[in-house]
Every structure is written in C-alpha cells, then in structure tokens.
Length: 273
Image (cartoon, rainbow, N blue to C red):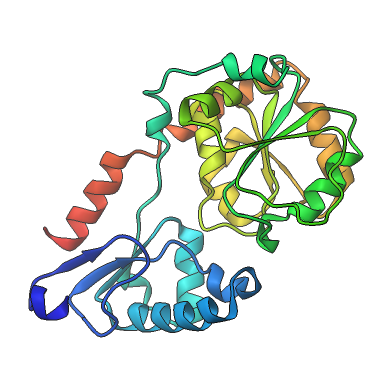
C-alpha cells in the first residue's frame, strides 16, 4: 500500500495502517491491548501491540474516539498531543430506526420491568462480567443481557435473561422499554451502548470511570463498578420521579452532541483535505 499511495495522504479507519508511512492518519480506538492484554490471545497481544506502537510513532496524525483514549495513547506510547485528533463516535443510526417492540412479547418482558445490559465482547475482564453476575444476583429485579457474551462456567442468576444477538430495531425496542441501561465496564475507549440508550430515551447507569463522564456528562447516574451496594442504591433511584424524566431529557441532549457531521468536519479540517 505505501508504494501505491506514494506521497499521498492516507487515511486508515480501523486500527491498522502501514507501519512506517509518515504521511497518514490512523484511527486507534483505544489502548485496550496495553491495559488489558489478558483479554486477547498471546499471538494477538504481541502482533497488535507492536503494530500499534509503530503506527502511533510514525504516523503524522493519530485519531481516537475520546479525550480519555488520547491521554492513554500519549501516556503509554508517547505520541505528542498536537499529533492526536479526538473524533467522537455517534449513535445517530438509532434515531432513524423504527423500534421493534414485539421482541418484548417474544421473551415475556413488560415495559419498565427490566434493566438492560449490552455486551459486545465475550467474557473479557474489562467488561466486568463476573462482577456483573454476582452483583445483579443480589438485586431483586429482572435483568436482560443482549449481545455476544460468554459467561463460561460462571453461575448465571435466575433473574438474568440472556437474549443474545438482536437486530438494531429490536435493540431500540429494548432500550425504549427498559427501566434503564446498566453498563458496568472497568475500561472503555468510548462506550457505544450508553450513547445508543440515551439517543433512544433510555436512562443509563454507568461505571464511575473517566471516559463515561466524558461521554455521558450529566445524562447518567454513576456507580462504583466494584461495589454492589453502590449499584443497588443507583438502581433504586431509577424508580424516582422527576429524576428518571430528567435523566431521559439530559441523556438525549447529551447524545445529540455526538454526530457524524461534526466528526467529519474535525477530520477534514485537521487533515486539510
């Protein structure tokens, strides 16, 4: 590829790029490979950490999805701050979808009678799945889990319903009809599910970690992702009005700050394309 593009500016959007090309931008979404290497196979750890380090050091610009991820790249690899561009994600795709609420009847769920969680990885340590299972077992309420998650040999509590993969329209239906979204991650580069939920008018309760404050602002309730009592207290607050309505309003307003047009403008302006 370097021979093909020669002196032209190259944009790489998915974590990998020619490792020694200078006149390029590469999107590195997060620093997970450095912070939680145990979440990956040994081979993947070695290859990806090497490539990411070289790409970050040699590329003219690195783009990432949050100020938090930018600070991680600066601290771990040493990229100068003026060579890093923060371009946020967006959940605009959820706004144009028609919610498919029939999925509730399919799984015998009732509106506002369950708390939703969405996982995009299998049993990765940073997703805090083991703690999640232990924590919800102590809360007398229905929980629903969507996505690609493998609980391995962990004991799954009786109050957890596993749905697996759903379409985006079905997911929107689940967001809109849930009491709230529970997002217990210990580490994220951004965190798409809370943004999707806020876009759909679903209150969110998220881990009290820096990147969640950056994404959710005053549109979320925060809990200690290692303390069951902290989570229990927050879940109880979801039933309180006008707090619930306020969360929905502030969450939606917050989500609208993240849009692809703004992200594209940042990219084009920085790269002078």
